[in-house]
Structure formats: structure tokens, C-alpha cells
Length: 226
Image 1 (cartoon, one colour):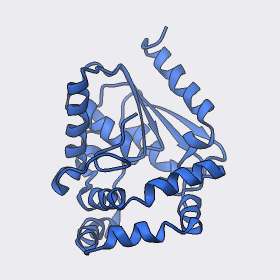
Image 2: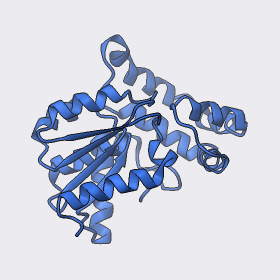
Image 3: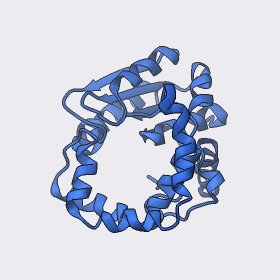
Image 4: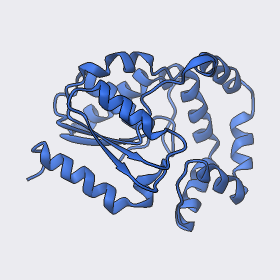
């Protein structure tokens, strides 16, 4: 379960490599160095998009892909046209990651960020998220990713995804609406969709055992597990 480039406790690459193809290439490079050939993989939110990009670009060992509230659909309309330029403007502001990390020292601010996802985490979950978002490096990487993120090529390529795909969507997700998973199911031949009532964007953290069981069942269905 690696941190994405620059996120959590990893070292950040150059900003230009914080794009979807760049992060997919970095993760593929990590697998190569570790000599790992995953037969099944699960990705959350942007992580699901990165895994799909890797599968499309050549990850022959992968026989089961699980998307947990996957972020595959770009913003539509004027908001979508303005998002990347605005993010690039913001990421260039000096001291912004440090300011965000400083504000995150307030537990109420962390709780507000988590509440906006539609999920409810316990006190330990909130504390752990607080540790991460208080790191200026993590904040800088998240901003850089937003500035270089472009899902349009992935959306175009999704219909040729050959890896069996299970889409798991929290019905109460306020970050990536569950309707987006339904759109992806319509695009990807043979894709399956499971909706989790009452759960938000962090559904896998709200009910980890239930989520793990879904992943295992899908991997077993694809012959990855006995």
C-alpha cells in the first residue's frame, strides 16, 4: 500500500511528473524495482484512475482492478475549463503549503475537511489524517497534482480497458458523486458496480472489513484467489 508520489511520507518528484501519466509511470517504476507483479489491485479516488492508466498502458499481470470511489470523470463546463489554470496559479503562491499545514493544526479544520467527504471517521482516524495534512510536503504534492491533473485522455481510453473492473461507490460520497461510477460502468465493457448505502468518500475506512471482503470476492471471481 504505497503512498502516491509526494503524498504522505514519500519524496516528491518534479511538479511536471505529478500528472496522471507521470504518477502512473512512477508507481510502475516502483513495482519494477521491487520486482512485484500484482494480480489484483485496489485504488481509492485518484488512485483508481492511476491504476486504470497503468492497466491501459501495460500491466499484464493485473487480472482484477477494484475502484473505491474512483475519480475518473473530469469536471464539466466552465468549472472544468478553469480548474487546472486556477490550480496552477494557486500552486505557485509562495508559502501556501506551509499556510495550509499550519491551519491544519486546528482539529476542527481537519474534522471539517473529513465531514465534507460524506464519511464519518472515529477519533483515531481523524488524528491520523491530521498528522498527514499537517505536513507541508504532503500539501504541496496535493496542490501540484491538482495543477497537473487531466482526466480527459483517460476518459477517452476507458472503453478499451481489458482488466476486469469492480466499481465500489459510497452512496453518501460528497467528493466523487456515485453517479460517476455508474458512468464508468457504462463505458467499460463488463464492469461491475456495487453501491454501499450510507457511506461516503472514505467508505473503505468507515467499513474496512466489508470493503476488504468485496475486494477478496472480486479477486476470487477473477481466479486471482482460490
